[in-house]
Image 1 (cartoon, one colour):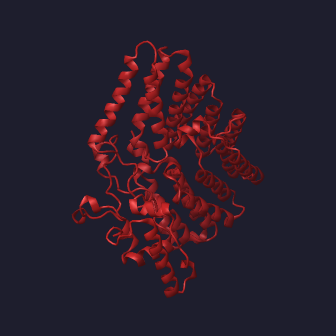
Image 2 (spheres, rainbow, N blue to C red):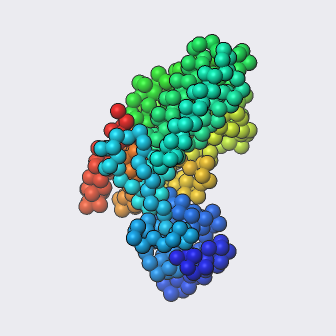
Length: 468
């Protein structure tokens, strides 16, 4: 539709959007619409089909006035029979879902729902085409062959290939569903372990290989956690810490302590989570990367569950100070799961405030800020799990304020997630919403009852059912 109206240039679209918003403001006597605009980044997402969640209600109103159809139609995949030629298949049409993950048995793959963080989103996590799978398999085999062919010691090509593969996985982990990554993670960890175990590493290369083994083990710890197995997660995390020790890498030691704090937090052990965060802060020393911000935010969340308001606020302040002093390090250079961007910080702060329960209005505003930050996040800052966490925190804050319908609206994108994205943290977050509804008499109305039933259905089929 955008192409048909020749609005594919941002400035043209923005002027049309603002004009429509101002006209609607006058016609509907709604001053909120006056001056409403759209950023270039948001336009590019709409135009390119990279839509994570439904636009805000006011944006929906303007878009529907511009195009004369509902936003659901604008953002929904086009029916196969009505798709135009490839040259004009862009505009607001989201590409159809890609095939389901190759790691899943065919009988399970057949029942997977389409969609991502909302029904109108393209699948970031859904497998690859057969050709892409063959290319990926060939690349992994080439990596194994190179490692064996270089003889008695690792050459620069092998180390470079492993580094590139680990970096690919660190970037992919927050954005893709676990079933698409787990096989690659296991394979890379096995390769690094075999190279280290067989003494085929030159002294000058050992430090980097231990670091890569530690990062891979850390991701497998997170994978075990995402599948709801804290025992296996801690085992992998301890291995990652040993690797960090052998690499003599202070920032990696601190990062693993952060991971152990996260695992303990979601396992319902906030005291242990606070202790791991403190250990990480001790290990960090002069580390200036974003791991320091993560540690402070983890401390805030842990102390909020412990009901310690003073410690929670102190940790939030420490996170702010650490952010101001950040100097990205070699872990941040890996990106993805190895770095701690601002949207994630906003999410942790909101969660700590909501859980502390001292100021429901503040918790709601902070959660709204976190949700907005993920809505407008750069691709390398976006994480489907953390965005879902921010949305459930917003629902919790609204329940505390008695806004049950607002809570249902906030958690809706989470309940639309496909099975392969329903990791342990997301399921636990939705269960918190269920518990809050059950504990509040205002949640006994029809909206609250229906929402509880939806959450029960959602949590009945987590990601772990797909990975055996």
